[in-house]
Amino acid sequence: MRNQRLCIAALVALCGGGVARADVPGSHPAYLHALSDLRTARANLERPAGAWIKWDEKVAIREIDAAIKEIKDAAIDDGKPLEDHPPIDSALDYGGRLHRADELLAQARHDIDEKEDNTFARGLKHRAIRHLDAADAFVKNGIALADEPAKHPAYLHALSDMRAARALLERPAGLVIKWDEKTAIRELDAAIGEIKGAAIDDGKPLEDHPPIDAALPWRGRLHKALDLAAEARADVNEKEDNRFARGLKHRAIGHLDLAIRFINQGIADAEAMR
Image (cartoon, rainbow, N blue to C red):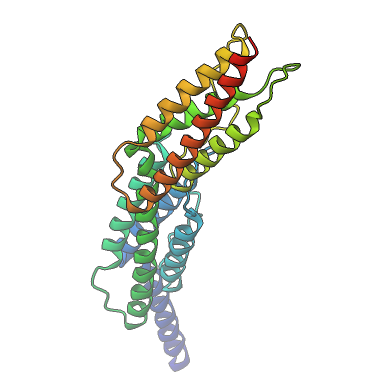
């Protein structure tokens, strides 16, 4: 009888311990909400095809993954994979996705930062918050870069005009004049490089421009290229508040001025052949 009572007591203790462990996730609903938000934030950070900014989303994703691991190491886990999250809003551009990820990180941080009575979990909580703060800093940096093109529409117009001007400068087969169009093209390419160096880019290749008018003679093409280069210069020369971009702007204008000078030389040589 005594042995039977001991066995029953042991069984109760064992079951009680199991119940206590099973209750751990339930006693931390905010952590489970945080895991859900972190998975969704992580998905929003994945760069869509064609999106281009000078920023590496993988850095922020690594910090989110580290925060998720800290929570799971505290034996708080909903058992769901990283892919388990609401669908990402396809109408959002990349900047919009980054803003949404930023909101979710703030919500997750708030949830994780709730009062924690478990001494062991407290240490993991603080480490998770450090990772979230690091992720949030990276995401805010990405937002600044993703939003930059929207603040510089003139630069995007300039890129479009320079690609078209560049195409017009390509010499038609069989035409011979004492002028090297490649010099002007190099200056246009350098100006394009300066703008892209300021993280202002529409992501389009050099070949993306309106069709060249096949009826235009070489002189007409050069005049059209000159007009486009001048328009690009006016666009690039708009007021620039970003100190870093200001230096690149002035260098781009220098290259455009050289390109315009070379194109004018080409027009003069083409006119002399008439």
